[in-house]
Length: 265
Image (cartoon, rainbow, N blue to C red; front, side):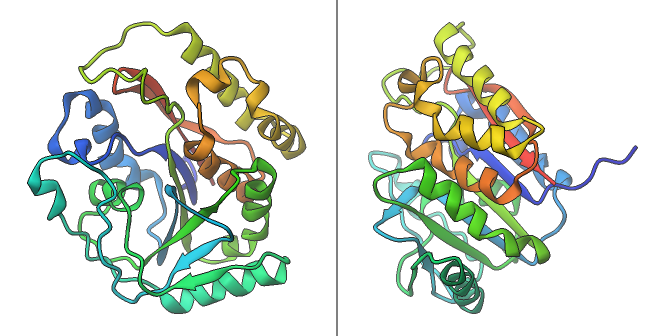
């Protein structure tokens, strides 16, 4: 039986530019990213919801040729010259803004902001040819899970088009707990949360998934895994958009901590 291609994915994008440097702690993630496109229908447009952009209302990139935004610090000089020259899609940005407006969600288009590393790092591994138009959509300040589920729900008209929607975050994001050397040391607290997240996103009924994600902070070890939830919220957008059970695409170690990726058809 042939498995259907994914149209929505959420994954862990790694630590800054370390995946581009071949960091051993990212090996499993790098290998996964390079073959992930085999599970995805070739899109006409890529929309990325990155954990590294928060605004008071949703904002979309509006440049036809977005610059690079190197939003990381203290890395080798060569990581500040990498380039991902994929074209922007200002007309699609306006269309998405109109979709959000129809759902009662105000938004704005920013014609100057560039691709941040939650955008260009994974796409450099997935689509190094950089020939597919790409957009980026911000998170909403305040980090309210309800608003991000609603954001995904409002974007459901995109499912009628050949668009790949990517939630770029990290299912574990406690900076003080990462291992900067390759490690698969047990972490029962992280396991508790990752197992909960798998259960929450794979419910047969979207209402159950929605209820679970709204109450994510009550999950086992939630605040250990996410002292601040910006890296989890792209998952909320994806779940609200898909409204179907997720499939686990990746379950392995990144920077010494178990991390997940999910896909939806």
